Image 1 (cartoon, rainbow, N blue to C red):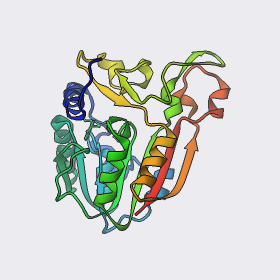
Image 2 (image 1 turned 90 degrees about the vertical axis):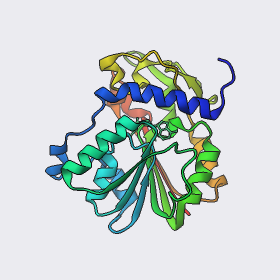
Image 3 (image 1 turned 120 degrees about the horizontal axis):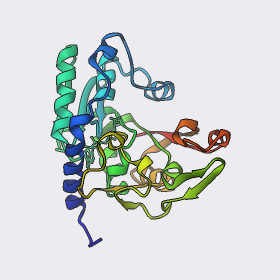
Image 4 (image 1 turned 120 degrees about the vertical axis):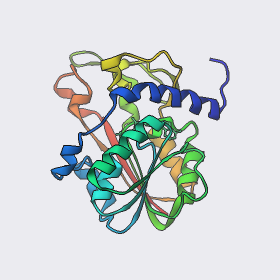
Length: 257
Ligand SMILES: C[S@@+](CC[C@H](N)C(=O)[O-])C[C@H]1O[C@@H](n2cnc3c(N)ncnc32)[C@H](O)[C@@H]1O
């Protein structure tokens, strides 16, 4: 690939995510109406009581987590690159009578007024769209209030580079130490909606930030790492058999300013 600037990568990625929008709607409004939360138990414990606090969600897509934070009583700003995903989020917020400040923004280059948060949250295929993890962590640290928290809940980078070859066998399909990836080396790592609609013929570049680079970037930004948990999720290694529970599939990092 010819050398690409961070901003041209972001523009390509925006077109890619726009192409996925028609089929990516997230949870139905009814599930929120009946009290459903899209946060898992580890995320709920990590974010704590957000009532009355200011929450920023980065790469929010159709806003399901942002809506959950609003239902929990937080003042929520949620940003994403892709206007059609944000439109879905706004429609759900309206149907639920919830207030979420959805903003079309590049998380690498947020408007100055998007600042002063008690919690910055990013999850499930969010961090991989940051072309520079150090610049990303610096920006997050600047937008947190003193005492505020960062919570990252993500696919494990080891999962990103391992593919199931056979029952009880894995193959290394990616590179744990070289983050940039054009497309996906394993289609099972691509956004789930591509299994339904195929891969749009649009260049897209994501980044497998390994655990060391995420922790290093968060520390270099002056934040204090409070916890780092790794979890198995056997269903994320389909066909591997019972040993799928012996390797990490996801992680959750919390840090404080
Ligand atoms: C896998 S989805 C988000 C995951 C979200 N937590 C969820 O579960 O729906 C990835 C999102 O990142 C957004 N994105 C990609 N690059 C971005 C950037 N530079 N700034 C903001 N959002 C970005 C895409 O538009 C897409 O909506």
